[in-house]
Length: 128
Figure (cartoon, rainbow, N blue to C red):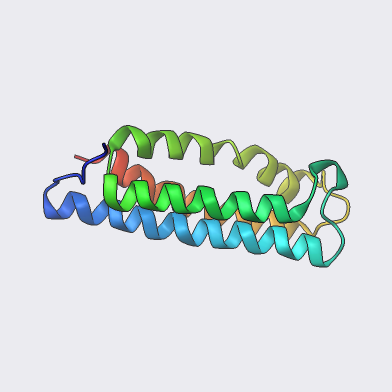
């Protein structure tokens, strides 16, 4: 059974901040999927947007819970690495013009939010 972490108050505070930052990242991601769906721009090859939205809510709940309650450094590091995998596609869409139907600002805003959330998670995962 996973037990609640017992950290010093400043360390626990960093994990709670990381959880809130991830929640903001996830809300933006969910809204992005919904916006693409509403504009009929969601790629048909990705399947149903409803599945992605539900999957996003489940993953968000698990990650926020893990960061807020479990407060495990390795869990936070894995979340950080997985989030970093979003950056190449976001940067390509923002700066290389690889997206023909979505505005580059859509990708740029997403990249900024990803980097900000990664910074907060890195503080919890690697700071002493």
